[in-house]
Length: 74
Image (cartoon, rainbow, N blue to C red; front, top):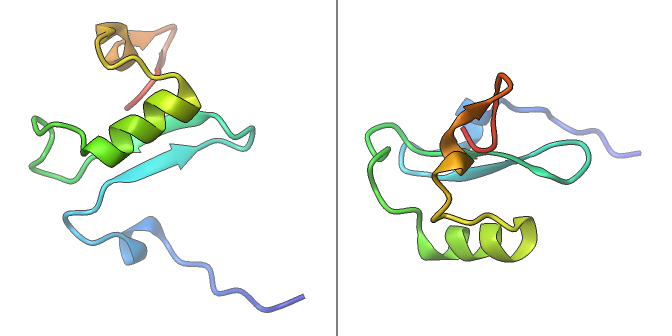
């Protein structure tokens, strides 16, 4: 087995990077949005990936709402 260096997300992401957070079951848990870009449109490649593979419906405002203590996307 190869040795792996574990790094934090802060070490990996640049200040303008977006990220997908996937849980251990392969489900979309969250979308990391860079600071200051909270009101920007989700980049098309990320939006398409989320729609196609995780069935995200961006028109559904509940995607971002807290339900039962948990957001669909945070």
